[in-house]
Image (cartoon, rainbow, N blue to C red; front, top):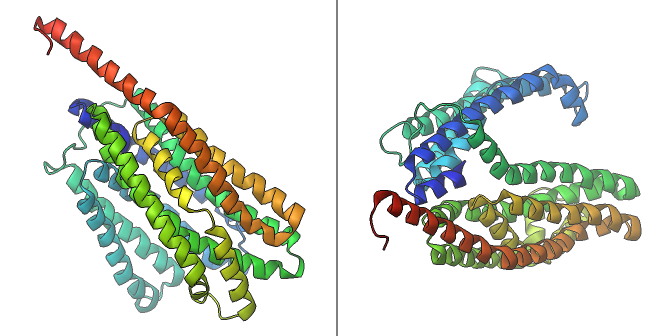
Length: 393
C-alpha cells in the first residue's frame, strides 16, 4: 500500500491515497484473522513440524498461543509503520518502533521473574509492546498531522487486489528466505556426515552475519520507496533516476564495507556465538565465502525495491524469484557435486547471477516505463484542458 499511496500523492490524487491507506488497513485486519485462527487450531502440528519435542511442548505452546493471539498488533504495527514512512514521516515510524522496544524490555523482567509467568510472560510482554506501537501509529494516522489519514472509506476490492499484487514480491522473498534456511540445514544434514552438526552451527552463524548485511540493505531501499513513488506520480523522472542511482551506490558502498568486515572480522563475529575452535574456524571460512560477491547484491536490492516502489510488481517479482531460484539450484547441486562445505558457495553464485539479470531488466524496462508514465500524464492533462475549454500550456 505504501508505494501505491506515494504515487497517488505525487499525482495530487489525495482521495485515491486515502482509499489506498484505508483499504490497506482493512487488509491488515483481515489478514490478522486469517493468520490467527488456523495457527491456533493447528498449533500442535505446526510446532512439531518446526522441531518441537514432547519435552519442549509446554514451553512452546505457552509462548506460541500467547504470541499468536496478538497477531493483529504485530501486523498493524509493522504494516502501518510502512504506510507512515511512505508519507515521509520516518521519524514518527521510528518512535513507534522504539516505544515498542522500550515497553518490551521493561515488561520482560516483570512478567518473567516478578510475576513468575515464564515464557508466557515473555510472549505477553511482546504482544503488549506491539499493542503500544499500534496505538501510537494509529493515533498519528487518524490525526490531522498525517499527510494522508485513515478515514471511513468503502471496501474497494480493486485496490485490495492491486495492494496485494505490489506487496507479493517482498512477502514471498521473506517466505522463501525461511524455506531457504530449512533447506540449508536439510542439505548439510544429508551430506555433512559426522560434521553435520558443526556445519549446521556454522550455517546459523553465517546467516546471522548475512542478516547484518541484508537488513540494512532492505532498510535503505525501503526508505527510498516513498521518494521514488512520489516523484514517479509527479512525473519528475530525472528525480526518479537520480534516486535509484544514488541509493544503488549507497547500497554497494555498504556491501563493500561489509565484505571487508567479513574477511577481517568474520572470526570475531563468530566468537559471539561459540568458543569451539573448530566451529570458529569453519564459521569464519563460511562468512568469507558468503561475502565474496555481495557488492552486486546492493544493486539487486535497489532495482527490485525500485520497481516495487513504482507499482511494477510484474517486473519486481520475477527478478526476486530468479535470484532465489539460482540459490536453490546451487544449494542442491553444489553439495551433491563437491561435498557439504560447497553449500556456502550458493550465496555468491546467486549474488552474481541475480543482480546481472536485474541490471539487464533495469536497462531494458526503466526508461520505457518512465516514458510511458510521462505520456499518460500528458494525455490526461490535455484531456483536462479540453474539458475546461482552456488552452494547455
